[in-house]
Image (tube, one colour):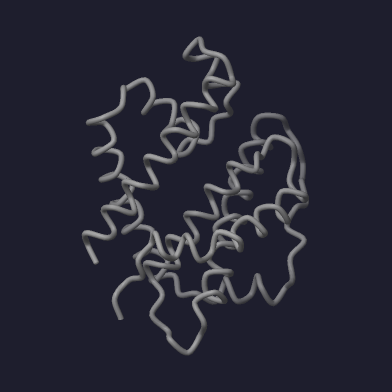
Length: 189
């Protein structure tokens, strides 16, 4: 079975992503934005679209677990960064159903490694293509926010811009990143 068309998958699952982000954002610390969770959810949906092979399981059910797992991975990473910076002992936002967590853990490590390598290659290719049409400053701001997890406040201080300008740049490049990734995926299919 060939990979699913990501633009179609995104259109079909937008409500699911928004619902999951909304629910998850109620349980997260203030430093985790809805935009960050949405990014993580898109990565999970992308991963699901690339690796969905089992026609016995509906795509929506498969995607749900991939999206949720991606958001939980992102939150774990943010929690560990926050703990390193501020000495917080524990932030409990993983109030999830045990069966959901167990199903996510049962995915094979090899499948996860392959998916991560494919996603890393695609991300690298998309970023190279974006460098052709965007300023290096904007690319740096986007990468600092999305890939390195820096807050808009930290990025604004580094680039001597306002926090709202940073948010505008990240939002603009995020749209371009998604469109470019979808375009590249459609060419591969």
